[in-house]
Image (cartoon, rainbow, N blue to C red; front, side, top):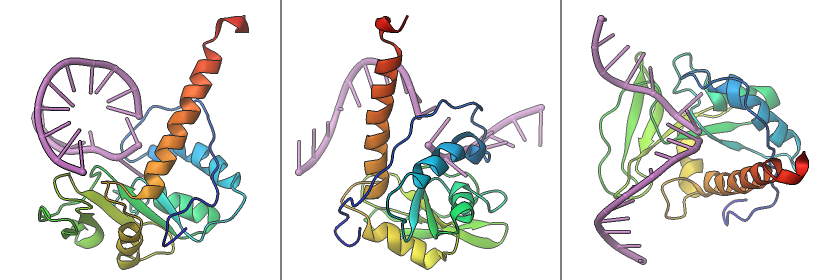
Length: 174
DNA sequence: GCGACAG
DNA sequence: ATCTTGTCGC
């Protein structure tokens, strides 16, 4: 939780993906697992930071937008790569930012979370505006490229996957 | 037709 | 995402 970023709850699930990844259709592939994980949380979050885009999507309906709609919870999208839109390159110093435009609309922000690394793409998902989205990500930074909640989720997911793979590939299962 | 293309 | 060699800074 803010402002210390202490972990107050966590839920991790392991599911086998059924669909191939298609740009713009990530939700169909990974949405189900995310929904299940969020359902397993003990506490309901005030906001969900999603590793993916929100409004910065060809149809303005990225993973963050859809996950937010499912639970009617505020969501913020934060991605490492651009999916749609155009922008000027942000300055090198940490904190430098540029708007992300798509079809004449400002759909996100290209933000340099730390100097020397590629910027991240922040866009509001559900029940959130761009200003608030950038503010949330900013307050979740701890000197790394990605905000702490996403790094934490990544680590937990990796742990879960390694354990699942290990368990599945053991001989004494046949 | 060519390039772009979340995870 | 996953794979994978090499380099850089705390």
